[in-house]
Amino acid sequence: MKVVATDKAPKALGPYSQGYVHNGIFYSAGQIPIDPAVDAVVAETIEEQAEQVCKNFAAVLEAAGSSFDKVLKTTCFLADMSDFAAFNEVYAKYFTSKPARSCVAVKTLPKNVKCEVELIAVVE
Picture 1 (cartoon, rainbow, N blue to C red):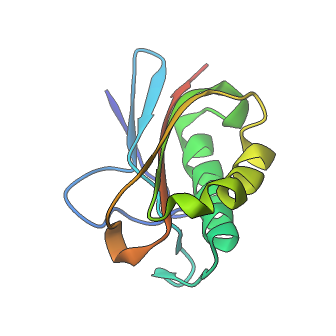
Picture 2: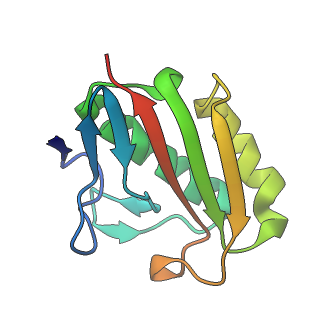
């Protein structure tokens, strides 16, 4: 197993890694909209937060040796399901290969953000 870590995405908030590669598959930790430049959540709207999550994933996927078009599965967590359509607008710009996905509403997310995403991707 290979640990994936990059300073171009937020560092882990707890005892976990940004992700692991094992047998050609990348397994990510959840990404929330922390701006790694300031190590804080700056984005306020669901659109801004989803955009930051995707930017974070661009860096983590690159560090893993993968990319958005190699994502097999995502799991999306929303603090408010009324944000679903707005979240999808941003998500669709990045996940153009339309990976398998689950999206659920949760009571609370770390740092009280509006969204979190985790993914599984092929590494070639």
